[in-house]
Figure (cartoon, one colour):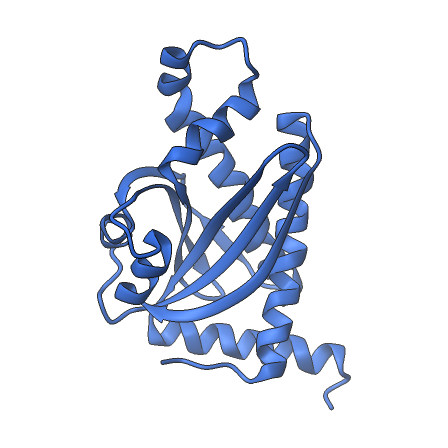
Length: 206
């Protein structure tokens, strides 16, 4: 499986933490509650391993939002939560006055908006730090098993998936989610090259 050096790994974690920090600020305004987000870990997995991590050994259903990005490297980015948490997140966005039936009808639109905010924050930070362009598609909403969602976004079984484990800590809630970046070998090499350029810039080429 694809591996980074410790320095490359730490640089990516730092970059993604900046990205989810921006997302947390935007989310705080939407839900009117303090939101903090962090990326405690990243890992490179194949599709089967990524799906197993998401479902935690159970055939649980997952709610996902995906967007395709092209530019400095090409990737399918996917935000995923356990399905049972998605209505909780939508409820935070719209408040307690909305009936459950109406809430369900709003779920796809609301989750797509959240996905757009979080994915664009992560990818936008990468683009800014690498001084490169990454242009994204419109968000797509998915519900199913984690393997269903990864397959629906065109993830081949042997494709490498960069998994970000994200902790969402709200004032009254704690929600765990994942962002997956689906990368082929060419995109992995492009990403690694961008990280090396970033490290060379901040260390003066040392």
